[in-house]
Image (cartoon, rainbow, N blue to C red; front, side):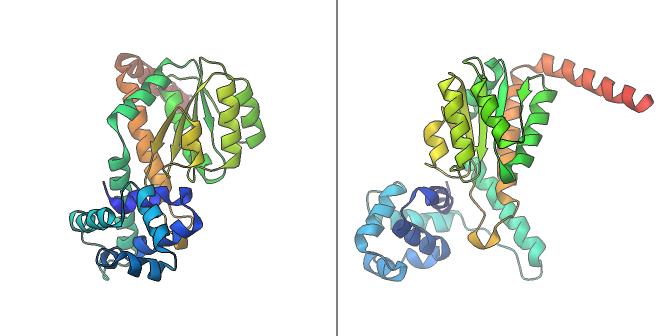
Length: 274
């Protein structure tokens, strides 16, 4: 697992001082592996105790263990980046490849299987998300509908809250939030859980609020940089994960899905002939 990807995914759950350490590490990983704890604290403009807390937050007993892991990570994860001749097309390409690679590393087969089972056994699937995730949710709605699931989805956030209140313990909610801290989505899944529904969360950040509320959390890469807001890397990571999830669901019902595919293709052909 890419250590820098892990740090990025923990970012929102860190304190402001710990985020300063994280940002410095993410920006200067090759230098940090040679620093003392005092030097890192000085460069990040925090106390040494903050560096220690940061290391523990991302899974290490102390700074030395973190530094060793960072050095190994830099050796193991090194891949040639975009060359100057490739320009922006090379830069974006490598960013997307890294995002997909990191998402693949975050995905656990057992978690995907558990999520697929929840969806497969659900009476209805309710989708929740706002803002930039709406395009992703629309794609998921279309995909699940085509393989035979009854999907409930409203683009309006107020209607989503109403939908959540009408769920039962036979339903499953899929909530998508890039940050994992979207207020409207958090309210909706709390309402859904009050009705006894199971909640699957899809987010780009570990230990964000949505991961604590959901029954099952699926994590994507948090590749988008602060200076690159609006890039498609996070969205493509989400679509990749959801594609894997939908394929896992379809694998459980091969014959039924094949029959549905024939029926939908027939319907589309008849529409063209009319």
